[in-house]
Image 1 (cartoon, rainbow, N blue to C red):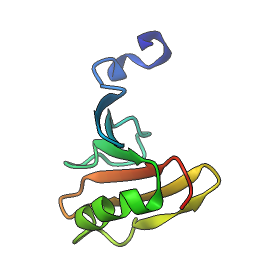
Image 2 (cartoon, rainbow, N blue to C red):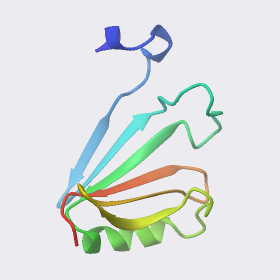
Image 3 (cartoon, rainbow, N blue to C red):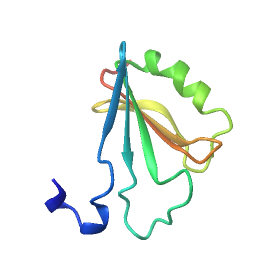
Length: 102
């Protein structure tokens, strides 16, 4: 896949994944455009993937304590399932996806 990306992105991790029971944790290095200023904490994203809104809610609420409210999106229904995201109190981006609707 490296031929599909500029040379400066060749050392990045496209995707890493762990699975525990019904939840999956996935991460990726920052691939954003240069207009978005990289700072410590926003140079990667962590994805939490589950089945339902209820399944994700407990983890979402615990990690969201003290989160940046400017870019906060609470868990909500989307055509593909459940979605929510935020930057936590340390500046780390968390993205939640539920495969099924509530």
